[in-house]
Length: 351
Image 1 (cartoon, helix red, strand yellow):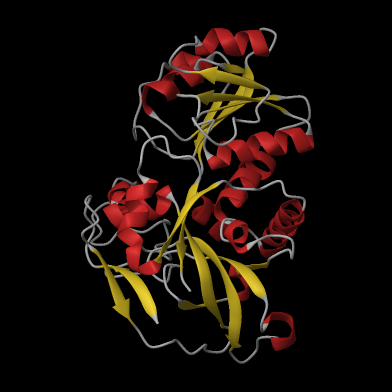
Image 2 (spheres, one colour; image 1 turned 90 degrees about the horizontal axis):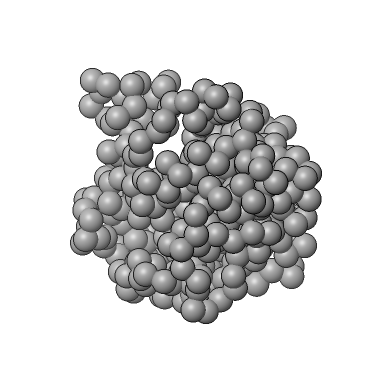
């Protein structure tokens, strides 16, 4: 079997290699998934470039430590090189270890949430049942490969972190992104209003589904939000861009509003006027899906996965696909993913 491996982290992605490995044998409590397709996300590139490692080194609980960890108890260390990236994908369960119900899993098509060191960019990998979700029969492989990470991110932020209510207004950056479109779709489904900020009108593909679309290059963001919300400001804000745009968005918070940061597409830092939060009694917090999942109780996780599968079956989490590349052309896939103005996700074909 073939697998992608990161030998060393570097911005030009020259640290990526393709290796041949023996097919793994599941141990008790494990399943083996024969991968069909894997997704390529910005978070995967963060691992390849070493961005997460550098970010973890800044955290106080990693001070004076040789190797940083994602949690203060150091139960989840950053993977040690070399490792295989890949956050999600779709495949078929083709082997089960002792203690696994074969009738439930064997031969089933599943969506998989993984990540380094044992990521989805390989033709066969071992996992545990709590990493999997059954794929609704109506979903093609291309959509199933993207069923976990972005839909989970959108669903958890909206329903479990922000707890946005019917009739409230949510402002979000990167309006043309997959997550932002999913959030807007959830808004239509659950009855809250969305305002999406975009930098350009896409030349192809669909426009954001938001109730209001703001062009950050031509529109005054604060004035547009003021008008849309009848002078009250945004109840909730989602931002994955950072930098100067985040500074403008903070000023759009309404009374007791909440802003959630979940990405740094433009910049990892920004300036903030403290009174923008003080005078609104506003809240500013961060979100990182793997860390949230690690701290979530089994009951809540089961509820989230059940809702994810139901909403996926309704077609609420459809992703646009820009292109697909075989596993042997992973560097071409990364180049395509980094192309400005790209509309849709890039997939890696494992078969």
